[in-house]
Image 1 (cartoon, rainbow, N blue to C red):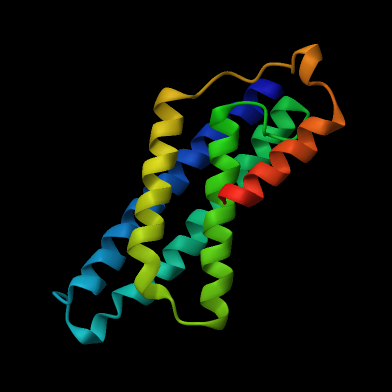
Image 2 (tube, rainbow, N blue to C red):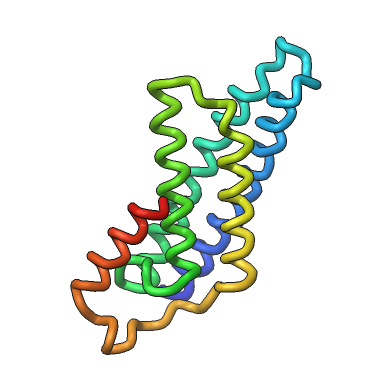
Length: 149
């Protein structure tokens, strides 16, 4: 069962990255002014970003279920969680103020960070070593995620 959760986590993350790539292209085209005004590419990009965010939440939750712990134990999981927080802040702030013009920069950075973490830092789900089996790990990584996300 753990293997299945892990596989679906990777699949969900790659799907989210694909949606973020499409949103990045739409935000960039809207920002460049090359698209006709009636298309409103930034709105479409924002909708696709919400879908990508939902898939990234699923990917992070499945990774946590596969590991039977909070998914913060290695750089791959930290990057997943950190970029998730960045995207959450962007989407929530966009509900109050219109900051769609930042969409190209945010989705581009998140896509780059997820791509690097998926190719360079990915590790299979393994139990935590005894030295890290402490409640301090959760506190430490939570504060670090808040600081970077």
